[in-house]
Amino acid sequence: MPVRKMPFVNSEYYHVLNRGVAQMPFFNRMRSYEQFIKTMLYYQIENPKPRLSYFSPDSNLLNVDKKIVEIICYCLMPNHFHFLLKQVREGGITEFISKLSNSYTKYFNIRNKRIGPVFQGEFKAIHIETNEQLVHLSRYIHLNPLVAYLIKDLEEYQWSSYKEYIGLMNTDICSRNIILEQFKSPQDYKQFVLNQEDYGKKLEIIKHQLMDNPQV
Image (cartoon, rainbow, N blue to C red):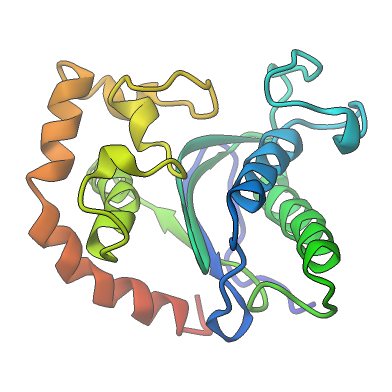
């Protein structure tokens, strides 16, 4: 595996994403989304911990005080994923994404009776340098299902952290305070996201340029 040019720094934030090999959809049923979320919850916690097969997202088997990354927000799309991550432990982001991708690849290949890679090479990562970038990136990530025309109402989409942010779900997947403390209420954050629908559509081309850039 090639050495990543950009080192990850503890306590810094990164936009992390990858897509399916040859743009293949790797979420093809509700169960696959649920398995990915279960796996990402599991691998954000450092070892030792019970085996993944024994873990349920509703259980308290994991020590949440021993995270290697904090998930700030996320969105799972049919053929790609987005995370906004904070690295907590040295090497945490690389370990988290690598183990998540490898585990899900095994699951997907067994369920679909296939072999070979599921994700398109090494994941992409962008360092977030300012608070303004951080807040706007959370909006961009949450707008993905809308700007891709998967749904007409963001509140209908189950596979992102948006409903957590606006108070319709409470799964404790995400460390939301860094974003939400900058708004008067979750409803103010909702307004911030939805007021920029057109902005999100313009940014769709940036996403594709990013995914196609081998230098990132």
